[in-house]
Length: 427
Figure: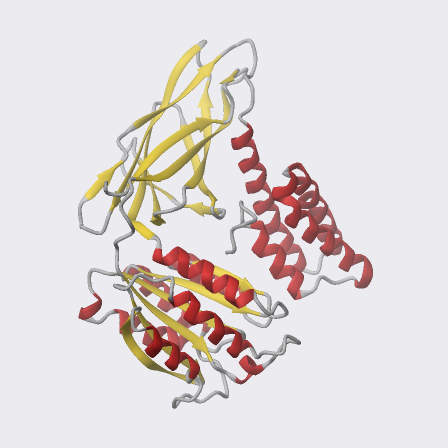
């Protein structure tokens, strides 16, 4: 078997360009494709924090309480972990406690038994203090026994929490500890702005679990634990060295989900973007927004691109530097690359969604209608891949027409779908 490695591919938005003015906007697509046949080998210690407050007993018309649905889903999700991975369980309500210290995933029955009894420990259920659950999770992961492992906190909640500012501070501390967060919100009563802040601060993810769908908790848990068990490439960083007069304006990840990647100048010519921890089984893609200067006809190097990463052994591996090139032709633009164009359309829907969420929060009906119509049209351009986005945008328009307000559930569903470039991606 050969060790896992990343292969870097790149392509431009157009085969060639004509630049009538001083400069022109352009795009490049970078693909990071896992190769090698070695398995994921980085061990994980995961702290699973579960809300056990009173509202977690609601059935939402499914015949099973939210807590029972989580208890059903969690053991199947834990089975996705490697035998070398460890799981800690934290229950939080009005207060929090470690109900199971870090335990090997191979001890499945011990974990399942604790999950069955997670609301029977000494934790007051009359309230929600997610900050206390997160604080205890970070203390657990900071133990010397968890050194040299990938550290992850997964939080599941269905309500508003006290201590929001402390939650944000803990997320910032987690980033310094290289602990990432996954936050799962059940139903519609959780604070979506807070949860997104926590995920962003810790380079993590957030999920929306539709409480009305009986199997949704299972689907989301399985997807997330499958992703975590597959983490292989650590501290992945993209380095860009644009040539004179070429500007890299921004970098955005476009699969498996859409998100902005901050660019940091290292010196006069080098820019770096931290890509985080990547999976063994799935490629990731990134769009570069470029500004290209006028040039005589011919083929030119725009930038040198290199991706560096760690396989968990503390050694830096690299894709090697590759050239990003563009052909200039005064005769006019060349053909558009359909794959790059599709990702640009998806990014535009993602950006429109931010405007839509702001308009909904401001109760600006005309702006909500205008932006929702734009999202629906963009979704139609994407065809089947954009069907869910189009459907939800039309749902916004229908609710506006029917009652004048957009429901919280629809807001969350639109927000969740807009960041997904692949409809098969759950979070």
